[in-house]
Image (cartoon, rainbow over all chains, first blue to last red):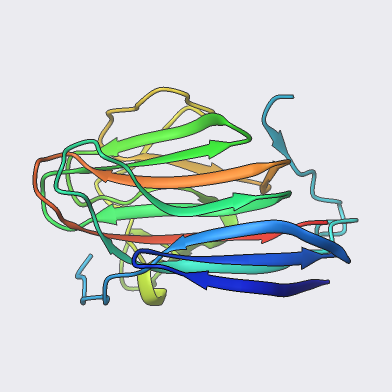
Length: 42
Length: 172
């Protein structure tokens, strides 16, 4: 089971700390904030 | 330990892996400095990687680099707008009205096209691959034991929009 422990945000990134299978703060995921998506023609 | 893929049991599924699929699809504005990587996703912990694809807008090219447990396993460059990266064979989709296949799940759920035709890259590849469309098709996800890092960069000295799609999961 995956549970969110905390979410932190700065200018460019969002960092989420997860507890997986009951292990405290076992995973940290940092994602870049997106630029608003524009239409793309393949 | 070297690169590991997860054996898919004959009955399907991922066996003992209790996983929750996670996706990160979107679009970023790259650095204006050629070759300066921007981190799309960084994970510390254990998990599985299913897909990491990108396609830059415009014709000046872009690169995608994937690092598993501290080792670069994919570093692809395209000189145009073609999709690059790695994805599961189950992500391939072909329209009945278009002979080109698509990859399921790009930015905002768009379906990036595979065109012209693709050049299938060797894998793993620790150094930059400058072929026209370096793509890797996975039959099973890749396991990471401690970290996953996915980055993109522009191949010219001007910022550009880079679309991407990432599929992964965290494992206990």
